[in-house]
Length: 377
Image (cartoon, rainbow, N blue to C red):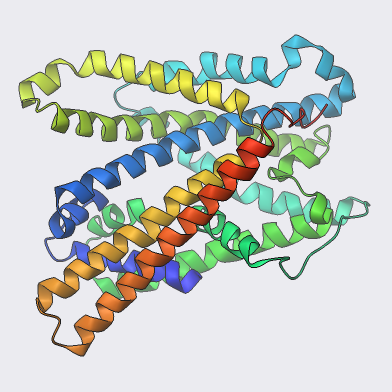
């Protein structure tokens, strides 16, 4: 699976060299046309939107973990400790003001905290594995059905999804060289794979089938080691949410300007009003959905569906376009193989999207709608 993900990344980078494109959207515009570019913009927009919901849910989960450790289940009876209240207050006071800025250059220093917030949970899962003395639930080593395998793929894809930024990163290289970039990609993905394996393995061995979608929920927040992790994670969510709003807002702005046929002067003149309206609606709707979402697992699975589109379908279209561009009638074996591989990528991405989306809608959202209790009460 890792090889497949890396291969689709390299397809995008190779495609970028055709016209020296600098963004994911530009690659699709050059090879697949404006309509594909618009679909990609919508996909990026929805991905940013979904991740914003995920971040707010994570903030609520961390507060619940802290309050449960301090007050036990008595916190469930206090309205001011309810996750709906804590998520709303934190979002309105700490996140919303930053979302209205046009640029977020002042948040660039948060990247150091982001690295800490990524590595600390890895240390924490290992630390808690040796510290906790609990009986884990059932530990599965083989899936119960084939459906479980396909359901995991979008979550796996979401964890390694860098396809939207891989072209801009490649464009920033001093010397755009596919061979050097391939080496760097394998190294970076290998490190990430190692980190995920450590965190996932130790976390699963600690709790087994009883593990929660957000593992931080299951640790004792009165432990200073855990408390540091919770604090770093909350601050990371707060500082990253506005960046996603700016990214999503930019994609929406571009789509609106294109469909409304705005001139450059009209686009610039209405920027402030659009920024206020779009940001307000974005924030209010993500907050509402974060409060109502049954758990983070549902949102991540939906994001994984979108990830399968960006990772498999769009690169597959680019590969077909490359094959036709080099050999219009596909007379060479190499060109036919490119088309064959591209078709497999597109069919695989479409199949995974359909299976997981159906599973989320029919089972996680409809069958469990209104039946999910408060996770800590």
